[in-house]
Image (cartoon, rainbow, N blue to C red; front, side, top):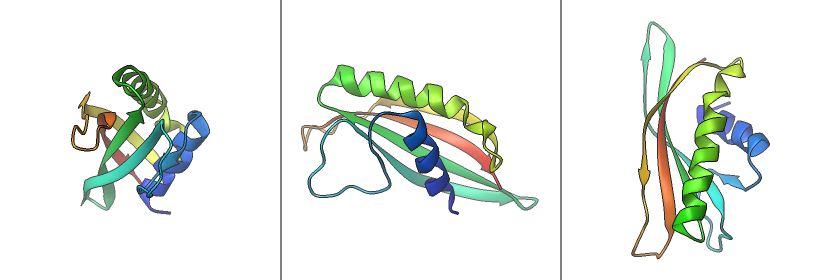
Length: 112
């Protein structure tokens, strides 16, 4: 299984909102979207940079969902596929063009 699917399945169990790998035409907020933004390998051990966007109907909802994501991701190391997780950054990522309130948290994962 690819790392994005592992993260999606894990967050889907932890959160009460839909967790997606790609946007569809008609999205009902709130929801979370996952994207792998980078990766690497050292001594046959894989690493990945994963961006998790929390989208809500207001900045408050998006921010609260982002906090839930960060709490859940802190425990993702309980999965056998994940050996390390660290929060790289999180920030307001509102898309004014789409009038979409969102936060983004970026995680560094070491995985098998």
